[in-house]
Image (cartoon, rainbow, N blue to C red; front, side, top):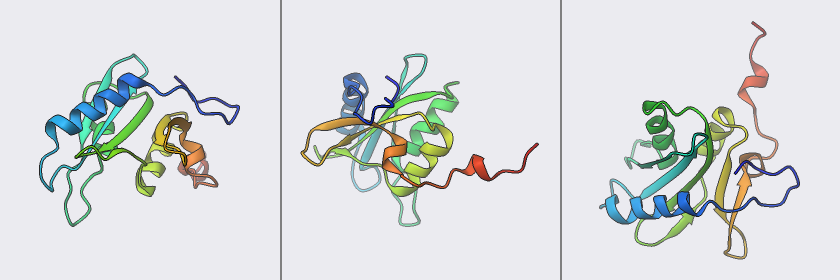
Length: 141
């Protein structure tokens, strides 16, 4: 579901959430893979990925999902969510992931935990107000 323009959260995509939770439960092992993410592509497919933790700053699960989607011909993501291993639940994207999501998919909806603990699906722009928009600073062709 695309983000709403009303400022109200969109409906949480339960299938995407369940795919991320299942990936975390099934594949996250040890310190190397501690986060899972899932995204719904515009064509309806769901792609999952795990982070590759490394002290040098390996890729977050959201970035792995972007690459996995592209490797499957999916370049248009509608919704994304990340969850922690060990039942830690939905985790917000880090600053780097927020910026990448905004640059690649400015209309993407991100599932996050709200202040009251309930889940909300919000436009990435709400997670990164006043953001630097890379496309706005490129020379005209």
